[in-house]
Length: 239
Image (cartoon, rainbow, N blue to C red; front, side, top):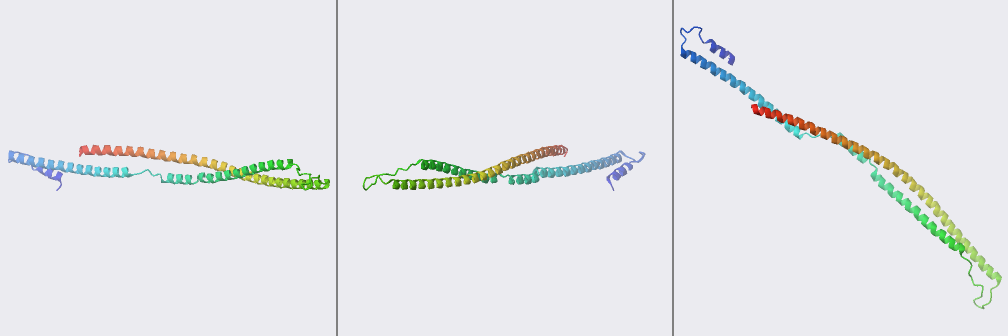
């Protein structure tokens, strides 16, 4: 029988009249009812304690899981990795080397051309300085012989000037070619700088978004843990 039924039966056992009902009988029945009521309270208290313990166990488990929970930034980290890989800074180093390389070549051509111009001026200004006196007899050489010597000198000088001019033209052609390569790589560098700037902006955006997400997660986690701790403390007081 259930406890309420047993209490009801104990109360019904009390007679309506006191003809055969002694004080001892009354005390015995009242004691029985009190014992049954105490048993009822104990059962109820035991059930409540079990419920509290069950809730405490669940809360502690939830708290442990929450404490170990990490902010999921995997998608943002993937985006950040891709953005960093797309940064052309490594390529920019190669381009800058090419720019310097062709600049040096063009500069070298200009320096060599300047030397040729100086040499050309020296050759062009050079005059015939051959002796008109015969070294053997000490007499003046024939005019025809002197003219022939001058003609040979002038021919050699003209040939030398032509050689210098040809070298100068070749150097100028090379210099123009190197300048064109230099300018092409310089333009490429400007494009890469713009790309690098765009990538830096994108990286900064992703990093800010990641920081905001982690901050929000930490705040929400803190609030949730505080709520759990408050509930645990409340339950432990009633346990």
